Image 1 (cartoon, rainbow, N blue to C red):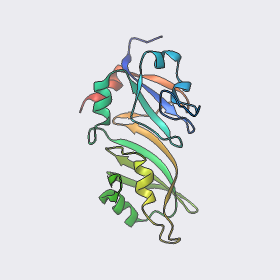
Image 2: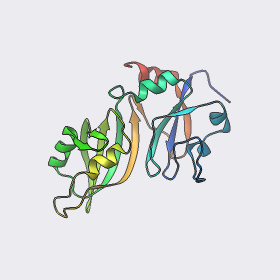
Image 3: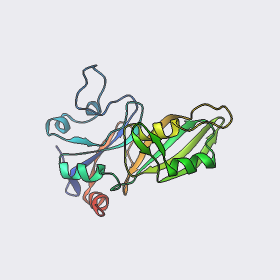
Length: 191
């Protein structure tokens, strides 16, 4: 293991591609995020901080320090930013509902901020900020809203986590790196 002097010894980042599950092993033989990382990440007990589902991609942090993992996943502690493509026309009213929150069998699902950043035919690109992460939070939140034109549920077609706290994703899909000590301190400063 080659750790440079300015690298964190507590946190590493992976840009997770679609098609990998966030688990140490899988009974169904599917690819896991550990298939993308050196063997020592698994054997030395590095664990993912939070989850991204099979179809989601983007920033995933790993640590061996349970306290850091708990601090970064505790609701309200850390803002996560996602860029998503939604099938359907996302209106100003949808954005207001998403921020206000919608009740679901999993509790209240809501976003801190939703910004429309693009359109393509019947698809809308959004930047979504949340400070908690219930199971399939963003997919379920937007899936509970209806397209005003077609009267069908909005559907998240792609989801990519682009930042956690002050740490922004800056590596290619399938690649990993250690955070620097400076990045670690910036991420942990308000926790």
